[in-house]
Amino acid sequence: MQKGAILVLSGPSGSGKSTVINAASEEIGEYYFSISTTTRAKREGEVDGVDYFFVDREDFEEDIKAGNFLEYAQVHGNYYGTSLKPVKEALKEGKLVIFDIDVQGHRLVRAKMNDITTSVFITPPTLKELEKRLRARSTDDEAVIAKRLQNAKSEIAAAGEYDFTIINDSVEVAAKQFVTVSKAARLKQSRESREKFIKEWFGEE
Ligand code: 5GP
Image (cartoon, rainbow, N blue to C red):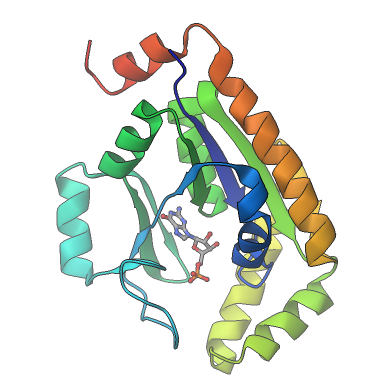
């Protein structure tokens, strides 16, 4: 029986990750996009349960204690985490599970589920272009933009840890490359050891 695979997508805020996923979504085939939980404030236009599950720090820390996260990290001073349960279910159903997580999250997922994980780092062509995009989004104030740019500089240094890099200059080209990467990610699920590995990892055997 075929089991699922994981595709980790990372890149600085403003690199266009969600735009690329949306542009590629019809050609990726059936997939499950993991909705993260965060303590950061909701941006204008964001919807609870669609973009993120927005919670307060107390609830997040309770979930950490209860072991409900596959991985979590602090980014820009806020918690972000991936809940274990829906991911486990989607993998069991044989789906491609897509994570939009930061470089710390990628390291944790690799450490736990390297066998079924493919990863891709998305970046704008230059730091200058990233700054332009963050300002154009104009949902964040200057201090937040400065923090995001600082974070982007350290994230880019981790790009070499990923299987693939996509330079998001043209969304159309980037989306095509993302479709190719997601096809490669699916191929990982064909290895015979997969089913046994997943059961063991989740402590079911
Ligand atoms: P934003 O606040 O712009 O939505 O996201 C900030 C950063 O947090 C992005 O780099 C995003 O990939 C990362 N992020 C979002 N959800 C998660 C998560 O569940 N885990 C981790 N480790 N990072 C996340």
